[in-house]
Amino acid sequence: MRYSDELLDEIRSRNDIVDVVSQYVSLKRKGRNFFGLCPFHNEKSPSFSVSPDKQIFHCFGCGKGGNVFHFLMNIENMNFYEAVKVLADRAAIQLPSNASAEDEKRARLKDEVYKVNEAAAKFYHQTLYQPTSKLAQEYVKKRKLGNNTLKTFLIGYAPSNNELYEHLKAEGFSYEALLASNLIGKSENGRFYDKFRNRLMIPIQDVRGKIIAFGGRVLDDSKPKYINSPEDIVYSKGRNLFGLNVARKNSTGLLKRILVVEGYMDAISLYQRGITNVVASLGTALTDNQGRLLRRNAEQVILGYDADGAGQAAIIRGMDILKNLGVDIRVLQISGAKDPDEYVVKYGADKFRKCMDDAISVVEYKVKVLKRQLDLNNTSDKVKFLNEIAKTLAGVENSMEREVYIDKIAQTYEISREAIAAEVNKLLRRAPEPERRKADVVEIVDNVAQVRKKIDPNILKREQMLIYLLINYSSESFEKISKVVDPKYIYDERNKKIIETIFENYSKGLNADNVLNWFAEEKDINYISEILANDYEITDLTKAIEDVEKIYIKEAKVSRRDEIVEKLKSTTIAADEKAALEKELNDIIIELVKMK
Ligand SMILES: [Zn+2]
Figure: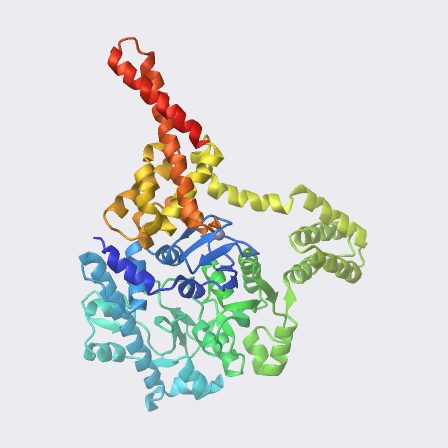
């Protein structure tokens, strides 16, 4: 199946790349382009560029690039057709229904499961207010959850029989969707039943507010305390943060800070007490995906996990993930309560906000943990302490910041400032930071470099310029260039493939705007985006095209000259042919001289 270029063009032009990228990356304008932190590799200063003129993105760090379709494919892990579908929907463009029957079936089922989830959430929520839901009402009262909080999170109650199943069946949902939602099960004897019973129900929503799963908490002491929906057609763990849709509702753009807690009940309880910029990582330790979600939505991330061993381990893992993403990370410190929820209930929101203000940095946190594990009166422990601290400090990129920490630690722990500094410097010398970063980049651009290996960089540059002109100024350049440029004079294999494809498609009347859609291989797309992202600063287009024409006219002549010289070496050549060749050679030589 293939969508027409006109349709792709329409979808692309109605989804401005800056708008689409902005949903994931915070962009700042710099000249004609926008820059931000690359969502595809770890970096701390922005090398990810988006060009509104060319409607492409390109990362100068890792080399990823493409148009709005490729961006979505990469960031959402979609295939081309899924990206087309999402962008078409976004622009309210109807797609012709020639998708494969299988894909279409899956898409329909997905849609229906979302609807099942929504209907179920409403049903549970309304049930909470029924006189038969006394237990649940008492529980929310005990947790002091007000009506506003119950409504904001659509909190509900799953009754004890098969009421949900009966309700959903009456609403007309298919059995397939009911089972796929994982809210309804089917017993061996073919009976349908509610999977959640006698539980307080918490719908889990994605950032768009769609209900993707449910968490159910028991109302007494029975086990398990929590049951959550398994992964299914609409829910994949580790890609969402509970409460992000609510936290975002109260703000536009980047949040100043966001607090991450372990469980959704903690997040809900904090919200009830006025801490609204809070999300829960849904049980699992923070994933890379969640880290990116956080970075897209907040300037500072405060980790507020429980004080127990598991919580502290989660902090360490979360710190590593977020640090690699270049996020400003803090760690919440509370005393007098075992978790943020208990703290806010005991001491109130103002005191809690103060804790958020005083949340400590990664370095301070690591020092604190070390101090707890080691006995600083013991000499060997003190050496260990010094070594570990040096490791942490060597990881601090900003040298001023590092100095401040060294001073602070020297003072607090009565270790000589020089001793710490010497240890840190030793580590820094061993692994110079820029080199480590360079290694990241080299790996990615390596295959590009290999192709280019033997070709004169000047030739490579002019071939890239040719591609640049052909794509950016197709109406001015194509006719002239295609007349004089024979692909056999394109020396780089990849450039040749690209130019041939462009020639072929332009001849068919296809539009330059869709160039990136003609290539299936990611490395080609990245490469073309890189060429387009370069600024060749063309001030005089006519002259630029003429220069290219000249080069290739000359190239053709030189090549013909060499050919004739070869032919003339032959002994079997007829006299009249020889004369003709000699004349031609003579003319070419004169022309070549003139061209210089
Ligand atoms: Zn990148």
